[in-house]
Length: 261
Image (cartoon, rainbow, N blue to C red; front, side, top):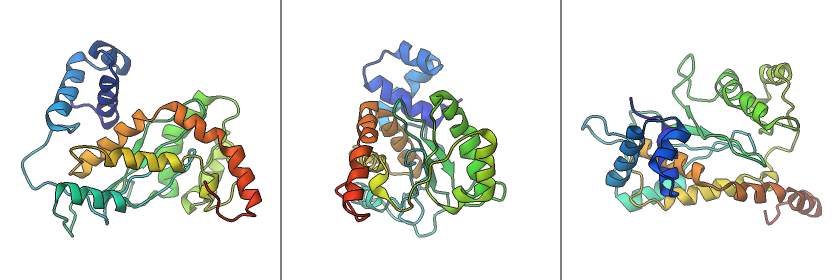
């Protein structure tokens, strides 16, 4: 059985950090054969996964491709326009107007002590195959599966910070967070100055752009993003979060206008 996206990305990240194969296998609870296979594939092809079939390669496109991270455990959707321009220039790939596959969004969270795994949220998932992250999907695929366990890991003092998207502010979501005992932070919408992960988001895109060879398929792009998320050091996250005092003072001084952050 092939490894998952997060497993493959973590294998490559840990091996490239100098960790021994046996230690990687033990840490990720994988066989040494699986670790060796993933890393050998990465060294030989620059990709994380085995290619299936020999049909036309899927291209990443402005219209279909998305990758997102959360803002301190909030969901932020962003078109990967700049990244797509970089990929087309680097790989001279052909953009297909009719895209047969689905695009992929990512969700992740940060705290002062750790970060969550980066989770791929299918844009073709859900009970009715809906492409948006509805309130129901937000509860079942994000809150239940990832936020609640992560809140237990963080412990006392955990506060969920997510934006004011309809899928987050719906009554069903509010009732759920109250039911499971997760406090939600109230903060102004459309306030990137107060989002410590904004710079991390930019850094993640820069890291993916630096890949050589660049990802040429949606699946390669997915694995590249997950791998770079794993590689971001916690020290970087700590610096961003501890900058919040300066950020708030700057916003107050600017009377709500934009700041250098």
